[in-house]
Length: 303
Image (tube, rainbow, N blue to C red; front, side, top):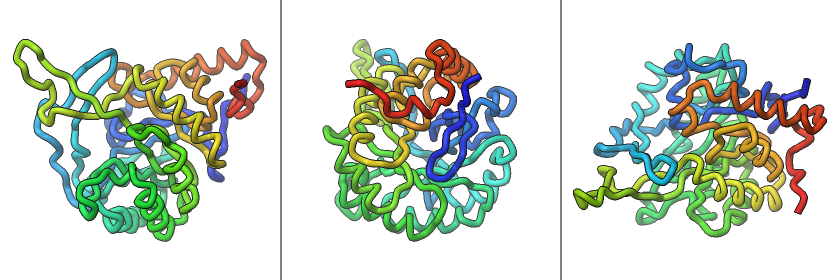
């Protein structure tokens, strides 16, 4: 049998598979639907300082073989999260990472400081795809100086594992990756969704209430693969790949490109049990190729 364990940032994961933030809620919703033994961890839905109602419906639609969503990072806010959600997180089943979102650097720090009260949390993922209200609406994750400042402030607020989720909506990922690592990130999550839209031509109306949204699913995979490969050549930290992973070969390809962990996102919507199948398919590949430890594959793409 292939050893499927991986070590990232000093943490050992029993499998390379994690759930992508926003596709798995806070974990308790999937009990009975997913085999937690197939997961190395889960990344919970993003939490902000204040409650967010989200965007007006419709909030999700199919398009071009993938999904466009414009949920708007709806969440109860940090205080209600701590009071109503934190105790139901499945800490006894897998590692739990909390996703943090904010409109300013101060927001990120304030949320992390409150989350530090939960002792079982393994770490955080910073979602930097929101507009920076202090910079005229510029997406935080598109500005390397803002990325550096967010990570530096978050690093000062916690000693726990810290990954930053970067946007694919930039031609060059390396400057953002380097800024995050220089500021103290333990890992990178690559990538968030692409900006997309869909139109109902008969009605001459957009299919989403907010017109545009985040495009995910299988069509995102080539973009995500390229970003993982580019970043892995520039920085020496683990990478959590996210974008279009629906089978075991997808996962193997991301490992070859330089990823260590794999986040399953849109696939969970159609198939909550996908992690067990994907893990089995990865094991089959390893046995066919005589791979004794999955970690041997990371970054071994021959170019």
